[in-house]
Length: 116
Length: 109
View (tube, rainbow over the protein chains, first blue to last red):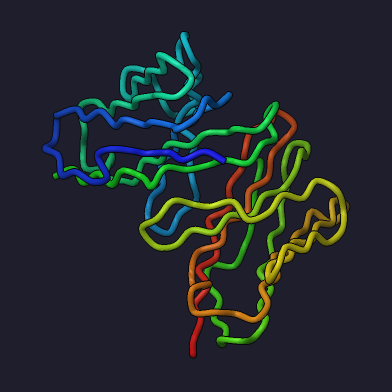
């Protein structure tokens, strides 16, 4: 199993500012992902954080808005840039410790962002 | 398009049994996951099915029928702590996880 720590756990931000969320895993993992979850809705994958290279973004998400870093196998950051109220959501870091792509996902406790 | 359907909300009584259904239409299939998510907390893994049939794990069981695009999560001997959202997710042929919106389960004494 993997324990994932995220910070901040919550923040209130002003429109137009940027916020970086940090994700730390207690063990080396193969895959790390960033999700967004609106209240009462499903998880939406933002991107796969690739170690040592650019993240792989899903349709509707771009690097300029959501820059991601993954300098090593246990750490990643997601920045939400130039925030607007529509960015208010819970952002979840997750990791797969299994072999290949079918391992179970472990999640951080999420970062709840409110943009005023 | 790809789609995961599960009921929005269900209510059950403590000590009873409840079945949460999930139907899916995806581009290929590489397994189906069930996750539990308590309010304000991270989702936690419950089960993984890739072959047809029933997988039992304590009070929780998960069933899969690939031909029908159907799964259910069965919770027995319900406890108040089982009140949570239950997320169904399918891994498609590209190993992408497609998530359902979750079923909020309310347990009443």
